Structures are given as structure tokens and as C-alpha cells.
Length: 147
Image (cartoon, rainbow, N blue to C red):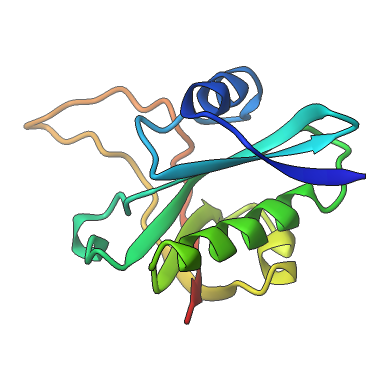
């Protein structure tokens, strides 16, 4: 049986560092939530300010990382739903997240999130500011929950 638990930012970052498939932990977060099975943490979510500056209106938050160990059915949906409840309780009116285009988004849809469409992708590197890409470069899908 899965259960939600408060988790520190340090604990969430450590979990993500060890288990996330393609990203490092987010630098910071407004809050984070853990999900456990039989007392053992099997997933975490980190929620912070939107990465895109144009979305930083004070009422929008973003799920910046979600990481769940394989084989824990419904854990992702549970974390997405809990994130929206917590964000609303803190006064946020909108919660967004991006997933890779190759990911189905089943957990988000099960938790009541709405697909807005494809966004971004590609490299952040530019001739004037070269960077080494350590993340997937495919397009993303943007999902949201709103009041």
C-alpha cells in the first residue's frame, strides 16, 4: 500500500540523484513530497517556481522533478495529485509540468491534468554561449492543473 510522506529537499535530491533516468535534481523547490511503500520511499516529487521566466507570475508553480522506482503502480499519479492539492493549499492557481514527447502522460491524465500541447526541446547551446547538453533534446509535452 502506498502512502504520502513529507520529505526534505535534501532527501528528495538524494533520491533523484540515485534514481532519475535522465535528469539531475532541481536546484531548489518550494515543496517536495515523498511516497512510500511499506515504510520505504519509492518516489518523490519536487515542486518549484516555473523554469520559464514568462510563467513566473506568483500564482503558477511547476513540478520540476518526479521520480518513482519501477514497479510501483499508481505512485506517479498519487504524487501528481498530491502536488496539485498542496499547491492549491499554498495559494497557487496553476501547476504545470513538462514530460518528454516519448512519454505517454498516463499518470498525469489519471490525476486530472490537461495536456496543452508540445513545447520546446532542442539544445540550449548557442555560438555565443556554448553548452554541453546532458539532457534529452526531444520536444516536451506541457500539462497543467488549474482552478
